[in-house]
Image (cartoon, rainbow, N blue to C red):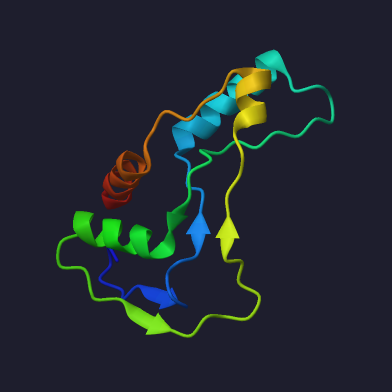
Length: 115
């Protein structure tokens, strides 16, 4: 969209994802290196919050003035409809909670991409 490319929305836009900002992921990795998890243990580094793809596109359009309208396409076979994690174990084991809200992370990413 920054390069004036039309965003393509597959399906109804109700598909959800759990977006997390890179600085939160870096902080989680540092905490994990210091505090665990036990060897071989797996924890989700996530927000636990679902954002629909339609919400993502609408936020992008808000922050990128003059962006082209959405082009709707049929849903693709095999696409995952909901994908999000539980941050409970990360909080318990490494005292991690995400700090950067979705909209703020998106703004920061757009600004970085403009450089």
